[in-house]
Amino acid sequence: MAISVELVRCLTNVRELYQLPPTFERFQRYLDLVRVDTGTQALPLSKLNPMAKEHALAYVEQLLTLGAEDYAFAAASDAASRLDGDDALKVLLVLMDDAKGGWTNRAFSEFAHQCENKYEVAHGWAIVAVWTAEEPAAELLRMRAFESVYRTVDERRNGPVRTLRQILDREGRTMRFAGHERRYDDATLRLIRERIEPHLDSHAAPIVMAALYGDVIAESLGYPPLGVPDRGGYELALVDALESEKGLKRVARGGT
Picture 1 (cartoon, helix red, strand yellow):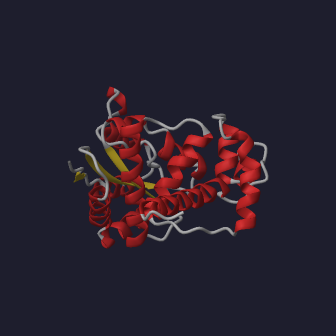
Picture 2 (tube, rainbow, N blue to C red):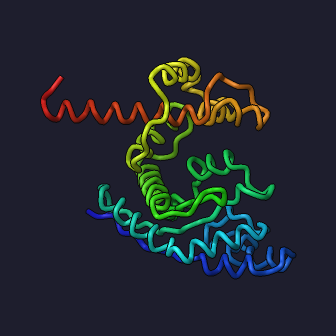
């Protein structure tokens, strides 16, 4: 069995959208792209900021010059070849605006992209998300494509994640698959574990967001802090996934 991957291009459409003045005409063009008015989405672009400022157009131009959609497709195809299954995935590169505008909150939008994407998963979309505050680069696109393909395949196979425990497990495996490297030392990771372990079975947004993103983001959202550093939950999840992989390799070799 093999996972098939199809590229759906939309950057040219987004460039044309951003070339329009930021008026109702632009927003109507955006609605035409996603077909919100009919209740069906032609393209899952709900996280695109249709009224973004000039920086978004400049970013789209950079992506087009880079050939970003082709990079994303190549990486997604590579990722799919490393997984078992018979899924048919559609790859779509989506720009999210976290630089200059009130449309997008990075933490909320990132979490929704990872854990609240029922429509996309059900229809086989693998959304490769990049942010306007990031430097567009082939390696970034590769990593995001690997993440998206893994999450989509995992959720189609195993269902959505709800509790903090489930989120940490899947995000750790996703980050490992995409090639992330650990950032925190052992002492910091022990502290993070102490802070979030009592909440592993929670699915309450204030707890989950504070555990995943850390105190600074939690307080900016009006949530109580847990004593967790920046993206502490994600970092702990990655290290646990890496350690789990090491254990499986030792077992496979017959070691202890």
